[in-house]
Length: 145
Image (cartoon, rainbow, N blue to C red; front, top):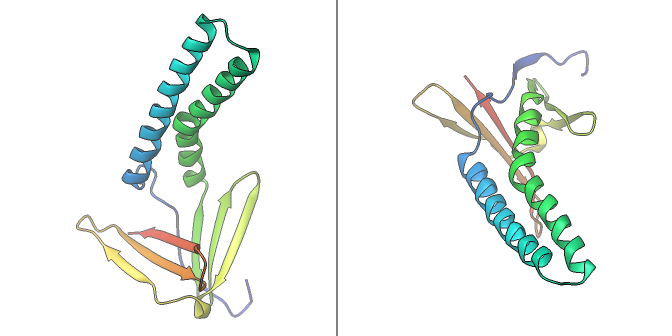
């Protein structure tokens, strides 16, 4: 931070609140792939099939377990280690992902934020940044009280 900058607000994602659609789709797709991988492994290991299919089944089973279960645990852990700060000139995001990272974005270079306030006095500040002819490169949602 520069010397003339002052911190206006700091916060962190709420512990038990997350995008419920994201979690549902993650668990649902993880369970579907896990069931498919289990059926694949049962069929492959009970019949006389080549070793390649058995190895593929084990790898697919492990990947399915990661996608459905372990990813949820990592997502919750990462949210608990994420911190936000808004200063007079920048937005700072500190997060843990294979080490501590801090990203900062100049407020003047970002588009107008969208403010969503809910009936329980919790709200979200959405800041979306898109470059032409590309996917969304920057999406930041800050929860506040």
